[in-house]
Image (cartoon, rainbow, N blue to C red; front, top):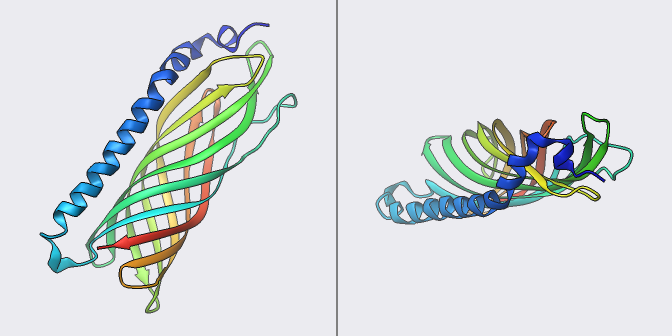
Length: 218
């Protein structure tokens, strides 16, 4: 049985890089988030007069990605999403946010130019930067909207009898809306919906995430 790389020679470079990129991406994400946290902690005493301008958040929920399906391999477009973020309030109702999110994995497939079906697993993660506006329509309730860009990395691991993987990183739009409830002036719970796009090999499509979040401001 020929390998997927023989049938799709243009993926050889992506497969080789997939060994190195996960480690580099993980280190980059960890370094970015650590820098954001340290910056927030360091600047907080300086900006003490502007309490709650900085915030850190975490969230989790469900994800759905549009992948192609083939009859010879299981298809599953649902996954589990998780994210961490750091934000700074510019003043009034505007803020900027940096975040990392993972959308879990999806199962799908495609057909080679020679007509051979293949399946595998898509794994999606991204780093995003967005600007947002929050409208407080009740003492403890608020509605927010976000718009920005994300660097989205998608990796496709081939299922047997093929071996190897392919990966691709693209810049995509990032949009989101959220409903928040303030338990205290510093702690807020939310219901968030975010959407972007992903691409790898010949698969491209929308990625949607819906989940709950918690945010701590200081």
